[in-house]
Image (cartoon, rainbow, N blue to C red; front, side, top):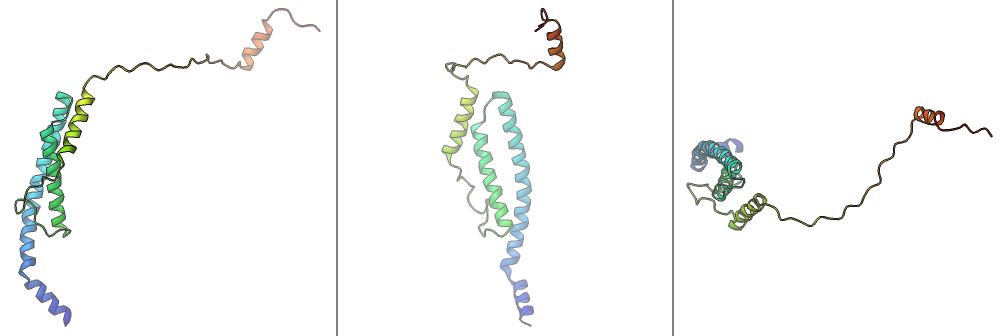
Length: 149
C-alpha cells in the first residue's frame, strides 16, 4: 500500500510535470543547437582551408555552444537541476586566454618557420652486400691463377 501512495503522490507532483515540459523544450533546443554546431564546424573548416588559420570568433562560439549543449544534456539526464539558457545566462565560462592561445598557436603554425642551423649528420659507411653463394663461386672461378699448393 505504501508504494501505491508514493506513486500517487509522485504522479500528482506538479514539479515533475513542469520539469517534463522544460525537458521537451530543451530537447527541441538541443536539436537546433546540434544543427548550429554542425554549421560552426563546417564554417571553421572552410576558414582554415581559405586562410590557413582558425577564426577566433568562431572558436569562441564553438566553445560556448559546446558548453551550452553540455548543460542541456546534464539537465535532460537529471545530472543538473539548473535550467540552461534561455532560462539562465549564456555560458561564457570559456577562458579567453585559452581561445587566444589556440589562435596564437594557429597563427604561428601558419607563419613561415625560422631557419634553424643544420645539425651535423654523422656519415654512414656504405652498406655492403653479402655475397651470395653463386656470386662467390663466380668470383672464385674468375679470380686470377688458381692456387696450386
